Length: 412
Image (cartoon, rainbow, N blue to C red; front, side, top):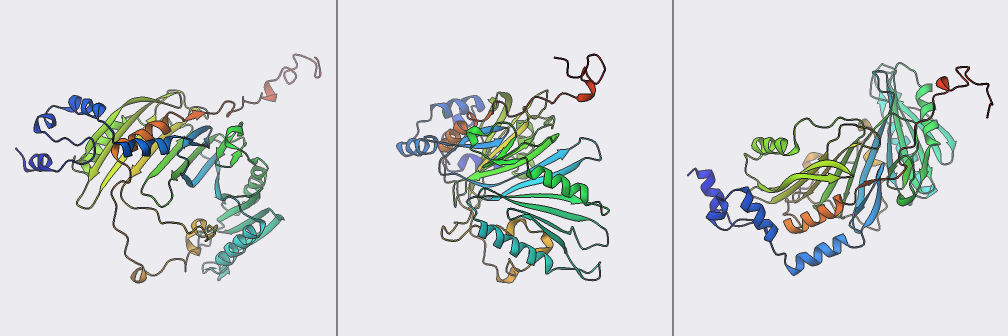
């Protein structure tokens, strides 16, 4: 028997599904899955699952909805909108920077943003400030233009900052060869198509948390991150409306990745086909350990033959264990500037490497395998596409009966 297999057999049981008998270890995956189904959760595990899956909160998620544990927060979301599907397409990135933002905080954040960008000089343009211009369209709409990087080329980044009710939204797009007007006009037009909504009343459009985007774009690629505060648990969601999806199965790719990065040393908790957002999907649930900590990684993704805005490619990743998110001081206002500044303007935020504190040690999962799987199942079964999230296509006026002279214009 190999040393590796011997070590595997001698390892102490970990988690509720760990095997404690050589006979069961050698019995194959069929018996392993049977034992997992027979696992009896503790009273504490039952209470934890009940707390996490009762009174879940509904979030808007692209063209759909999702229910998450009530204590979980939105840790970030952005979407890239594509106008046109050919090589000369254009894009706009939309991000929600903050909620419950007052006019003063909005103004202060923009003032800091402008000063940090303007303080950097473009040494390829005779030390001109990187910030090229600002326009206050209204008190709640401000347009910034700055050099994309230190270069002689006329390449710029344009940002339109919006305060929609109390939601701070940023639109960002790039222009090249000095052609700035079309980009700025697209941002201004898009700003009129974003609204604050309640998730259950989001209606048509692409929704991110408190807003919905009702734009006539052709493709949308987005990412979302959720999790409890100051926790090792994270849920990452990726949406790509028109992607055909992967050609190789999730489990096959997961097995190959585990062979390369984990030397095949992992626990296969569950895998197989499921239904996600009324589409066929696959899931792979594994756990793995090293000398310092244990981690779990659950993944699921859909596959479908007819990609569209209403049938997007969806990927879900739930992880637990490893590094914890830092606790947020409730008395400290959320930073509305730092995390979205261009890289050249971030100087001064971080301490030099030799002054930075040591990273904390990684932690074991705060959820047991049973708890994590129960929460995972509870979340995935709530994912659904909103009714009317994708409006019917507008008729092409060129092909209307009036345009072709088949009937007189205005004929009832």
